[in-house]
Picture 1 (cartoon, rainbow, N blue to C red):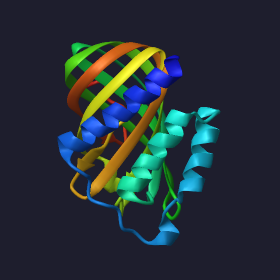
Picture 2: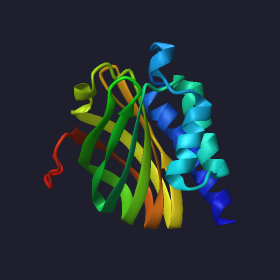
Picture 3: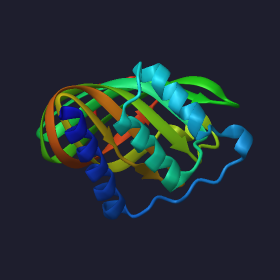
Picture 4: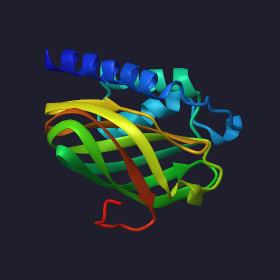
Length: 192
């Protein structure tokens, strides 16, 4: 019952984000730099330990909107909110041609959002020509529901670069918010 509710909420969140920001610019990169949908599903299965219907639907939605990504960020994060929220994470950027790089992110949010969660984050990256171009602020709208376990997906865009983080985790958190995440090479406790 919870899995069905969470899947429905995740799909509702995707639809809301699509209307709130419109459709992101579609991705067009060289095919040898990109990951196909089967590769992404295999990596997600390996990263999360299993795939759920909601996760597969989320990946399918992103591929339908944006096409093939040319990067993936595998990481983990923790966050909490009581109207104003904070989120901190760390991970590794993977690109076929550029290899792997450490990446950290943090950021504030505000909205109808309460509780806390810890999540694994699988982010699809689009239009990233140079790995260093990732290190900036990405605004976004996020909606999530974590009652023991949950799933969320949203789009973040700065310039031509689009990120599609897929989060699955544990906690007790519900709501929707607007904010940004600042991606950097080094960890920082300052969320700005």
